[in-house]
Length: 490
Image (tube, rainbow, N blue to C red; front, side, top):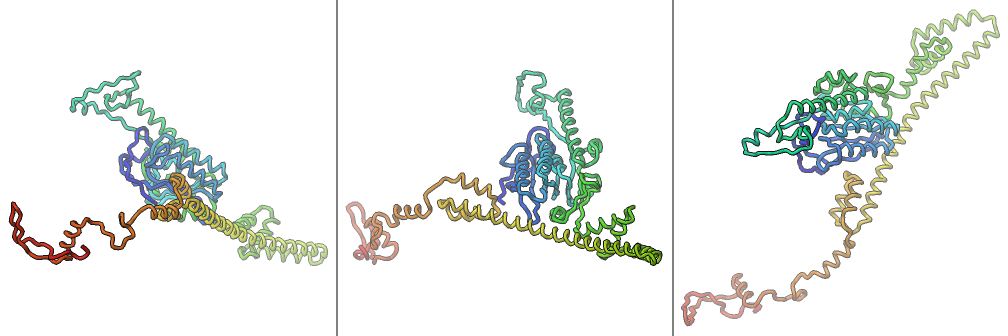
């Protein structure tokens, strides 16, 4: 991934931002489209400071919303937001967080999040859209609040001899202008605006099921906490690596976090067999004696029976048999019940095996779909490049790299001017451009004038030289080196 130039993040306006990030330089890589893992999880990466609208330098809420929309179109098991961001502008943050949750719900896709480094302020607002949040132990979570700045540069202007006049159409129009002294009314108005936006922030987090009530979120006083503290405060679900978070939402993952029946905020890996055994154990405790007996029989057949309960069932069966030894009709009825119990045992075994086979088959289908999607993307990339025989081989090599998103390849090809086919262009250049001057093709073609060639031959030692005294009308020269005779090739 190619890095862009470093940019300083210091936007104007109300911010939902980790205060330490204001004014810092950031290396911003180009945002990647959603990536579908082999287990069917669509990972959407969110990095660095956040702006409202699309920016060349930084990620934006508009771009994040578009990436999630593309992710749900991949029909994934779920969408996982991989976040490492200090936050950004308030403008657009809260609406985007609500839109992400609505978008996933409308598509019938679960939305999860994982915090790799930090998810503070506006970045945590986006994370709150998820129904499960995994965090690393050292992650920075929180800073749930709003910050704004007012600057008074009037004293500096006076020291520099500047006299700035502000012309406005209203008494409050100049609030926040650095060339105007900050008035108590302007400061109070700014504080009210910050408090209102912060209240909206608290409600968003609470509405999404994190941190308890809005009052409890406000009581955090915009503190930044570690991953473990975030779990204790109800701001995250569990300590996990990114790989573990992806595994939690893979084929055998079972959600028990916010929005499910349990509110413990945990995920547990399950197996179809374990689910079947758990259901039978629950049925074995039923008030319906017949249903409980069948469940215990099924557990016994699967090797999960309770020895005391089995002994009790055996004793009861023996008493019934002794009491009805002389009653043939009752004995026949017992035989029917035993046969029925055996059928139930076989049905339980078949159901358990079917569940396990279905889970494995579903995993294979999703892996096949992921492999097919990769092949289709590779073929589409090759077709797009093949349609442009006019581009140079070095550009073909760059565009053929699978790490470059298809959308970026298409954008580059669309912006490149269409020229002649490369072979034709090379042939034309070779035909039109000479390589040996006016006498090209002649083996002994001379390129220098005779006098200059003679001087060059003498300097290179190709001409036999002698020392002479030369007399001219105005000058007598001693020890002049001159050729003995015509030089070679002269």
